[in-house]
Length: 262
Ligand code: DGL
Image (cartoon, rainbow, N blue to C red; front, side, top):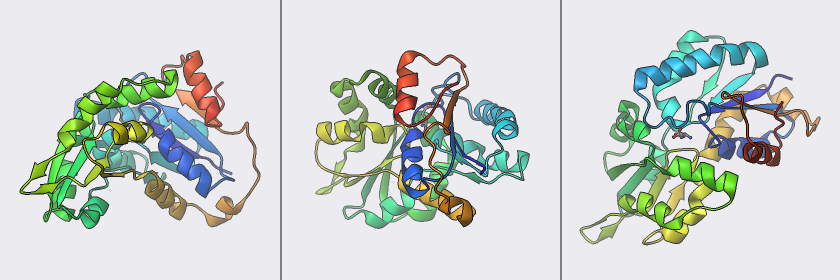
């Protein structure tokens, strides 16, 4: 059976992979982290798109995936069209800010989108707001540090809560007696920190994590016969780092997610 390939700049795509595992336990998975390019947030758009398109060719040749999930908002919002043009035989599923569900769900009309500086600056993100959220006030909040904080947290097991609080603080807005009631997690790294975000938030909000929706979208594009297969094999799934230099902490983490590193 051909694998489902996940691609991110780091460990963030694991938040999507864990949902995919639940939905399609019989599938083989390959997880690719472009740690040599991490973080993606500050990359110039053209350079990032060229990098991801360039990395994808050898990965497709080696793993021959049935589908590729770009489990990274920063890459998806700039590179999906280029990937589809460069590799027309391959199906790509993207991860883009969950602005539509947020606009449907908000009661106060004040929504914040928390992502990397790259995702927040994208025309793609602005177009999503123009298409789906014209009746809301959407605040775009770019964070330089949260993705790295999530990496540190998942590798080392601790995070400085004061730093988390400082990064999420701009998401919270009070205006005309109303308060922000939804924060969209527009970076796949952030769900790993969501409990710290809840703890340090000035008031309770709904944090939207699109991981399950992305996994469902991927499932809908797969051949159902393959998805029904139940040959469970703990050693089959693999993780690959573009640096080629996994340290002990990342090996442990990948192992914890059921991914082998050669
Ligand atoms: N996980 C990525 C995203 O969803 C980006 C993290 C980074 O490279 O800064 O946007």
